[in-house]
Amino acid sequence: MSVSEAAVRERLRTVLTERDEEIADRWVHLQLEQGAFGSSISEMELRGEADALIAALRAGLESSLPVDRVVMSHADLRSAVTEFSMQRARNGAAPTVTSLAVLSLKEALLEAVQRGVQDTSELLAAALMINRLLDAAGALSFDIYVAGREEIISRQSRQLMELSTPVVRLWRHVLAVPLIGTLDTARTQVVMENLLQAIQDHEARVAIVDITGVAAVDTSVAQHLMQTVNAVRLMGADCVISGIRPAIAQTIAQLGIDLSTILTKATLADALAAAVRITDQPEVSGDETAAR
Image (cartoon, rainbow, N blue to C red; front, side, top):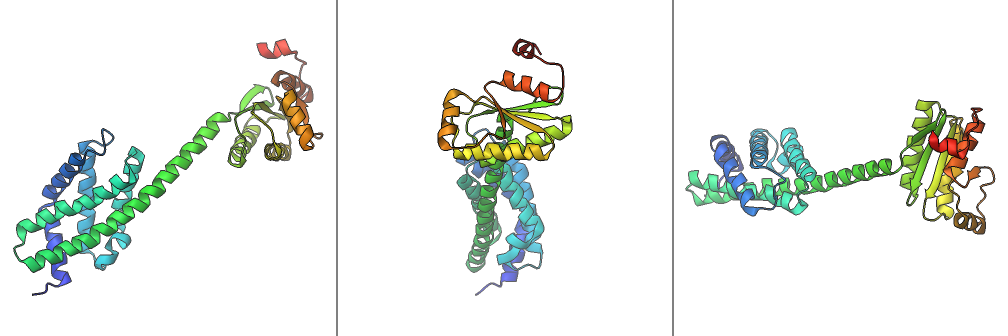
């Protein structure tokens, strides 16, 4: 005898209502047995996730949405799966482990259904519906996890770039950006944003871009430097490039890169002395610069 989808749906909703604690405990136990999380997620956190997801699943079944659309279209259920996946991403769990964690809920839920259902047809229909629901939840959790990890990695990369390109106030109205490593498009954007904001905040009149720590200068690096210089000038400030070592000067000359419109200095101390003259402040020597 066939069992209607509405009857199966009501059966699952009843099980999720009457046996929610049992299902949550079993699901947590199954995940702890897998041991894939190490110490990154505590048992209390797992239980909180289980309670939230089971409650959202019950609410989804209580809605009028078709079973195949419940996970993607029910706001509370989708939100619960999203938060579950993002929390795993923040804790550093592997994406496959995160997806399998959702799928392991199948076992816990099916065990609970088996305790209250004797009819084989109804049990099979319930198992099929559980598969449809949690396969969709597993796929959604995997997609959200991957997107979340990419967002976290992107944010961390940007934070690292900001830390590696600090804007330093050297003198009244004088700022400096010491560059170390490779200067690419993404980093140039961070440098410009931080420097331009600092120029506005400190009412700077001169910005020194120090490339002492830049391993090599090629056409691309030179273009990025020119972009930074032009942006600084648009803010009404002058720009000085320091750290032009002999090898870099030779490379720039060989590449035919024209830096004639930009004030360049061999050392940061020389650049600071030039900046002080530009701002009409008391003259400083290299020794006095170091002392300041």
